[in-house]
Structures are given as C-alpha cells and as structure tokens.
Figure 1 (cartoon, one colour):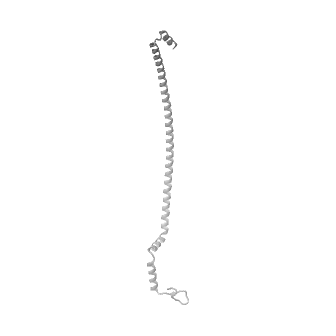
Figure 2 (cartoon, rainbow, N blue to C red):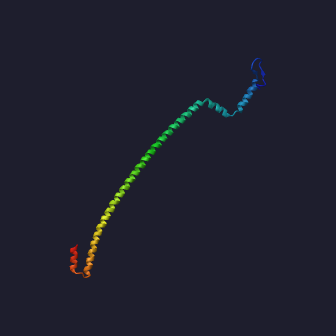
Figure 3 (cartoon, rainbow, N blue to C red):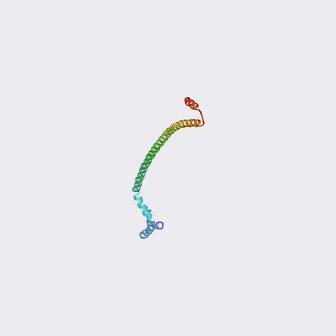
Length: 147
C-alpha cells in the first residue's frame, strides 16, 4: 500500500488511505497471537520479574547453604558417635578378656585343688586295697612314715 501510494511533491512523504491502513492494522493485530500481548506485558514488567528471580535465587542459595551446614554438623556428630561407639566396644572387649582370664584362673585353681584331693583319695583307696589284699601292717606303717 505504501509502495503504491501517491508521493507528496518535494518530500519523502506519501498519501495513503487512512481507513484501508487502519483496517489492515486491525487484521494484523487480530492475527498476532495472544502471547504477543503477554510478551509485551512481560517486557513492561521485566525489571520486576528479574528482581523477583534474583531474590528467589538468593533465598534458595541461602537455604542450600544452611542445609549444607546442617548436614556437615550432622556428619560431625555421626563421626563422633561412631568414634565413641568404637571406644566403648574396645573397652567392653578388654573387660571381657580380663574377666575371662580371671574366670580361667579361678577354674584352674579349683581344678588343681580337686586334683590334689582326688590324688589323696586315690592314694587312700590304694592303701585300703593293699590292706585288703593282705599287706602287712608294717608295710602300711612304713608307707605312712614315708609320706
């Protein structure tokens, strides 16, 4: 329409039919998607949107830093707890070994006492059998004197 319009003499201007041009502009406006209007609104408010995004990002970063600090603290607590648990287990093993050694020593001393008693009993039984077998009283007395 502009190419075919009449030129104004001695200028770069041209004469176009206002009604036709406005009709064409209305058709173009209707043909544009509604997203164009939304985009225009976004462009008008872009600084606000950018600032909101920046603030949101800063909040997320601060929250992430807090979460990392909490996790590191928990990791330190867990490490300390594991170390303490290991120490307690080692102490318990040492205590068990000590008590086992004491029990073994006690049982060994009781068995030694029982061995002595059994040996004396066996000797008494042997002497009694010898008497029954006809050993002389003199032999028995000499054995008692030897002991």
